[in-house]
Length: 328
Image (cartoon, rainbow, N blue to C red; front, top):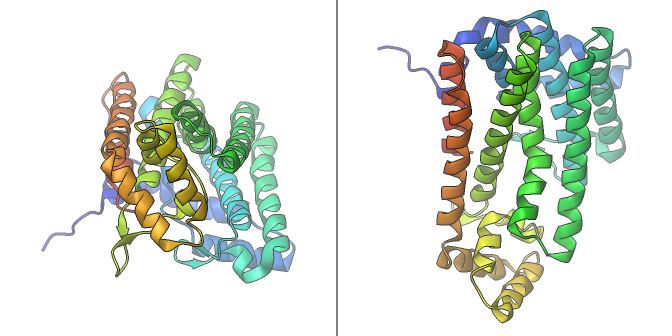
């Protein structure tokens, strides 16, 4: 019986060797002389996710030129930055679980988690400085700035509950798409591609990131677990995402106020979550959002089609489809 490759294995096939070489490089980049930090970074390394971001960096380098030592630096920087933001996110959200394991703040409390996140962020910045990769550092620093602004804009608007579609796209462009755009652009820059190609890959990464976040937002409305009910976490946190924003745009001001009142009470009232989900479904909020997500996926693929056909470009197309079709 033949071995069935997983979607991720298929995607990583053209650069599998380089990704395997990246593993010890990434582990080494987190090392510290402080024993507690070493324990924490080892724990992070053991519970790392699918590493989609390094995958995107290496494939972007391969699709626009070839993988170089700069590609390893770019992937290491971005994975360190991403890891730091996840640790800080869990503190902000008071979340005690990450990737099916305890989060850093669950095991070591918030103070240590914030400091560990700061340490990992600084290691990412130092990696660029020590290797003289100042163009990569510029792209990455801009990503940190935009991600912070996006999160704060979402918090501010969620309090006032006045998010329209344009603001929603601005938030997700900054808080999610910026990092994936940096992955694609840094990958291209590390391969020695021209500024025009680097900008083109930044555009591809932005479309991919928007589709990625819309898929995440749709998960909130999909049945989960044994009881088969949507989690409604975004609703409970008063985050207005595209399905609800679209549904609210279809109704009178009076109906809008009624639904927003349900959203405000949803943290205490489980029935309110179900009523908001029913409202979104009845106004085709999920159908509309799915269509917008598919449009962004196609925009991302259209950008890739401007590159010469290579195994890495084909894998980037597979990755784009995977991001939209994944079930978690």
